[in-house]
Image: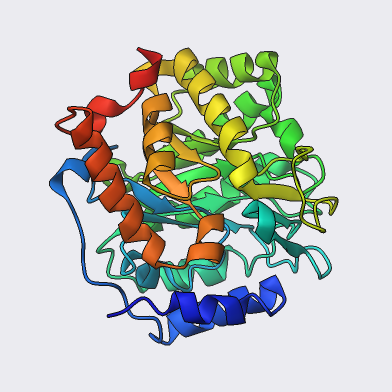
Length: 352
């Protein structure tokens, strides 16, 4: 099946970004975007949390917020898909427009604000899956909630048995006060609350618990997150979410819009945080690297910095689903060129 995105992409980019995204979701739901010819390579296989990943390239949260196309995206060649962020109660998010392309920068700004159909709608869809691929669930809090911990506990309670892994998202810049939950005492309270709920789930159905962190952290913040994560026994860290920083190199006319910046400009800062967290936790806590991955070299650099898995999203806006197999082919070639027999051998190579 030829890659039609070089023809369709420019047309989609004439539309408002959120409208174009909704059209893509609708097309995937209806099976109108067929998957490419399968490509997998044994060197890319890895095993984490007693789960086998056919490849380490995943879809980051934000693309499929309501679990509408998880299986369709697995069929595009992803090794795993993360849906969400999901809030306990439905909420519309922030007013539109709230997504902006910075095409010349290979970037995007969003201030969606956890628009979500809520955990009940997501649970219903996940319950109908055949569970043939790895799907993680990213949970957040409602904007008007008085107690953040209660929201994350509610999400974990409903979605634990339906998720292959669960992510606590305390790093979106678009929900007031959310990033404050990365502080030592609040983070410990939050993680222990969610873990208490997960402990009530039968062990064979209990998903690993991951924490997604921001790129805009002080050295003290990183120390606190690492220490609390090790202390509480978190199963994984995702580095990183979008950034509130605006590099002076940005040229897109929407560069000053409020929200989180993703895409190419995020690659350097997110990879730096990834490496710094790996230096703090080593192999004790697996890391997922996300932020600015546009090709196999980017994915490889994340892995060498300490990532066991890698996620993409913004690059899909500009390159389409054919990107996934290109990344896998390039990554396999780079691993072999440097003499690695498996992906796991390369994890953290630059730190050694």
